[in-house]
Each structure stands twice: as C-alpha cells, then as structure tokens.
Image 1 (cartoon, helix red, strand yellow):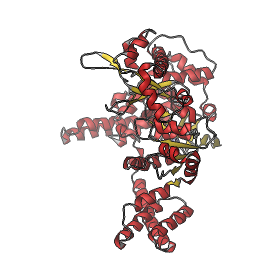
Image 2: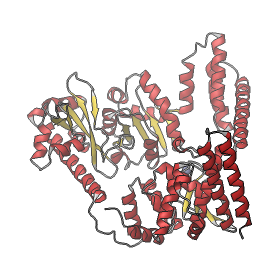
Image 3: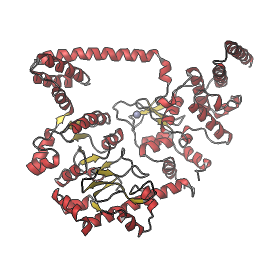
Image 4: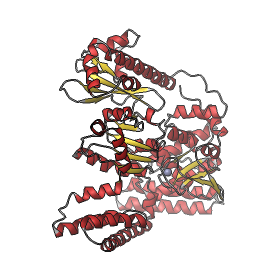
Length: 588
Ligand SMILES: [Zn+2]
C-alpha cells in the first residue's frame, strides 16, 4: 500500500527544509534564501542553495536538487518510503500501519540480512570442521592468527553442491531465499545449488555491522579465483567497501586502499587498522564519497604490476574529487604489502607509509618511465608533457615545487622548467577562456538538463513549460488560468509529467510542493525539476505570464505537428496563432 497522500502532505507541511538541511549543513542567510557547502559533493565555497518560500534546494556545483524527501533520500541513501519515515518521526508523526509492497520490501531486506548472518556463522563453523581443513591450513599458511580469523569472521564453504542450502534449510530458509541473497544459483534446467563451493569465505560487512555479501577464494585451480556475491537488495558493490566497518574506528586519519581481501586483512593483523578494499570493481565515486566521510587522506597501496599502476592512476582523480588528499605507496623489494611486512616487519612498512609519494610525484614518475631521458628528443617530449600535467595544478607553489622535481629528473634548470610550465599554463587558460565564452554565447544549452536522457527537443517551448511549472509552484490557484492545458501538449515529457502530477494533486486539494514528487521521479529528474523551480519567476502579472506561456506551448505544439506536412499547413498554424494572440491581448 502506498503512503496515503494526506499523510505525506502533512509530513511535508510539518517539515521546514531550512531546519532539516541545517542539521547537516551550516547555512548562511543571504537575502531571502540560504547558502552552504554542498553535502553531496566536496567544495570549499558554498554553491548549495535553499529557497525557503519554495521549500527546495539546489546545488549549482553538482546539480543535485529537490525537496525535503529527496534530500533525506540522497543524504542517507534511503528509499522514498524510508525517507518519509525519517521525516514523519522527526515531525512526531506515527507512520500509518500498512501491509504491502513497501513494508514487504523492508521485511524482505531484514530477512536477507538475517539469512546472510546465519550463512556467515555456518561458513565460520565449517572452517574448524574436517571439511574446512584445507581452508584453515591455507589461511594459516598465509600467516593469519586465530584472532584475525575471528575478527573478520572468515569461513569455509565445503566442496558440495548443497551444503549451505541444507544447513539453512534446517533454519527454515528455502532455496528461493538463498537465490535472492545471491548465495545460490540456478542452472538452465532450473536446478538450484550453492554459489560458493570449496572456497575460503570473506563476509562483507557494512558500516552498520550487517553482513551484506561474501567473497570467496577458491582452493583449487578453478576460476574465478575470487568470486563475489552479485548485487542484491542488500548489497551493491559500487557502494560498499570491505573492512570499512573496522577501519572507520581507527585513530589514523589516513585510509590505506588495497586491492583485495588478503592484503587488507594482513595489514590489519600487522596493526594497520585503517586498511580497506573495494571489491569486484574498480574504485567508484560512491566509494570515494563514503571514504571521505571518515578520512582526510588516502594512501593507495595497489600492486606494482601493470594492472595495479593503471588502477592507481584511475583512482587518483576520483579520490581527489571527493576531497581526499591522495598519496601513493610504492612497495620495493616485495610484490605486495603483505609480502613486504613478512620480509621486513611492520616498522619498515610504517616508514614506507610515511614516505609514500604525493600523487603528483607518482604521476611524474609514471610519465618519466615512458621516455628515454638519454635521448634529447625524448627528454624534450618528457619535459613538455610534464609541463602540461603540472600546469593543471591549482597552486603556484605546487607548480614550482613539482616543476623543480621534473627539472631535476631531466637534468635541466628549474628556471627553464618554470618557463615551460608557464607557457603550458597560458595555453590552458586561453583554451578555458574560449570554452567559457562559447558556453556564454549559447544560453540555450545552459537551459538543457544535465542528464542527457532528459534533453529538451524544443527549447522555446521548454522555456514556457518551465514557466508554467514555476507559476503553479508559486500559486496553485493559477491552475484556473491554465485553459485546460495538459501535459501531453508539452514538448518535454518530463515537464509534461510533472505538470500532470501537480495538476492532479491540486485537483485533489493536496499541496503543490516539489517534495511530493520524489516517489515518482528519479534522482536525475528531481535534480532538474529543482533547477527549474529555482529560477526567478515573478508573481506579479502571473495571470498574463501564464497565458503567454500557454500560447507559446500551443503554438510550438502546432508547429511540431504540422512539420513535414507542407508549407500551407504551417502558414495556417501560424495564422491561427497570430489570431489567438491578438484575441488574448484584447482580453482584460
Ligand atoms: Zn553539490
């Protein structure tokens, strides 16, 4: 059962967006609205805007926007229903009792989490049973202590098609449940069997302590060597980070990013309790955002092989964008941190961490390796590429320091390098200025939604459609002036749908807050609707403005429908429009 509209309306009415946002963002009043640093992207100067009289927020940096409900959805990563629950509780309201898909979904989630917990227990106990002997000996050979095995809840999946299915069956779970949790798979014939077989098992635990998935390392030569849970209703691999549940409690202010389970666990055992790993996927922006909630600095500690270097190069800008200071660890004399610690001890590794390179030096060094600096032509090429890279640094001090490093590497004077960087910087600034000018010259493109899927086909009509929406949000009574306009007449399907929804709400006597649309519109769509709502619109002359907008929408719709059907029709349409316009201008 959906949340009753009246209840939703009451929740929205009792929520003041400025108060709500203030709980997580420091807002400053400027004129009639508020500004602060955006909670959805990292920034130092405020571009996050809250408009109290429209109850909307809009970030001019990352584009996120909407009303109170989406704010909570985005900030806490919740579903529509969960966000309404949070707001209702905050407003001292009792959620209506309901059975139905949403309540079901929540129960399903809880059931999956409990199932995962039971599976983790079963795996862990198998590790110490005869079936798990091979797994235990593997982990012991890797030097893991019993305390570490317990701390990370490591386990073993027996070499059997249905050990887990039978074990959890005893607790009342059926095969379907295991399929949902990603713990079982079915083949073409519909036979359902255990996904993880003959593998050492690593439970993946979220920051709240729930077991949300598993990784398994195979004991024989079969592939893949590491198998992870698929995405399920409780596990999303681009959002979760292995061992963050433990690392978030560290006293260290830097997180150590490794490539996998074993690296992470060995580092923890050696006392580096801020090690984590992203799993089964390259580092995503969501991972970086999550890390930036707990840490200021990230040390990338990937393998030194080609794949590791490429992954590090990819991760650097993602982490920097999330506001983390990035350093890159270079392990010498061993293939990975695990081997290094075993060979040289933990103190040597701690020194290595302290010496880890700033990411600029790291990138310079990667660049140098592409050139033979004995050869003059290649030396020049290296210096030019380095100058271009360093010209991208924002601070002059940084450009000077790293310019010095590059100069030293190539054996030229720092002054020469500085000149080269300045030249590259000038070219860069000129290019950026040109791009800016081009953007300024095409205001139409500025109006376009950020998301490509929502692009306007007809800018002139879309401008008017946006105007109609803004007016309705300002004053729902203006619907009486809408001359029977429907969303089908709009050129933008998104704006048309939003109009129909607002109209339907108004007809039911419900409020016209943007927040109420959060359930039916996607995040991208809400971002754009908030952008539309945040534009200035005068309430003076609103009736006339409404009539003008509608005239534009109808004329453009006519032109669209007559396109390709001959000039006569087009002229007729234009004539009708002129007549109508004249008629409307006569109206008082
Ligand atoms: Zn933002």
